[in-house]
Amino acid sequence: EALAACKKALKIRPDHRATQSLQRELEQEQPAAPPDAVPERPPSRSESDTEPQPLVKELERMYDRSTQGNRNFFGAQPDFNSALGHYTEAIDAQQEVLSSQPDDMLGKMSMHMLLSRRSQTFRKLVRFQDAMNDADRMIELSRRSKAGYIR
Image 1: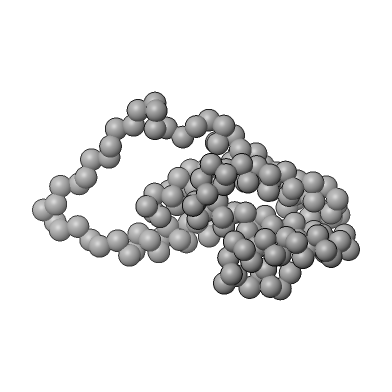
Image 2: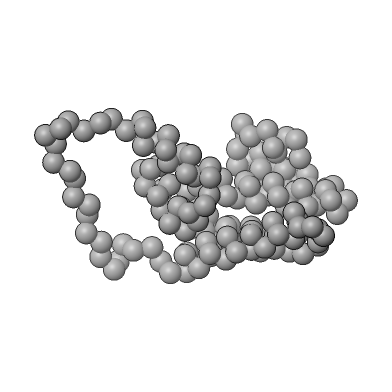
């Protein structure tokens, strides 16, 4: 199930290194099939079980806003106010995705990363309470992650 989620995520964002790494690890963990085994035929997909179009649009919006936020934050002349707006839009889009798929681990990882970037941006804008609020949300998503505690 996790491997299928990785493949799905890489179709949307093929350059995501963490997902690529996770996919490689999951593929290595899969037991090898015996040489005489017949490969399993993938189930046929009907219109009813394809991913809803609005969800794909939200994922694309999240990726686009996140990318633009990164350009504003890490650019030669950083524009933290613009980066903040883009990260907030990306978080809103990702929240829409998570509301329809609350157990999606990749979605939670994306939300964690977006909150981390926005928390950094709040710190640059000297909005420390907002940065702390995002850090608290990061900890709620992943208690093991050090970033939420550091931010």
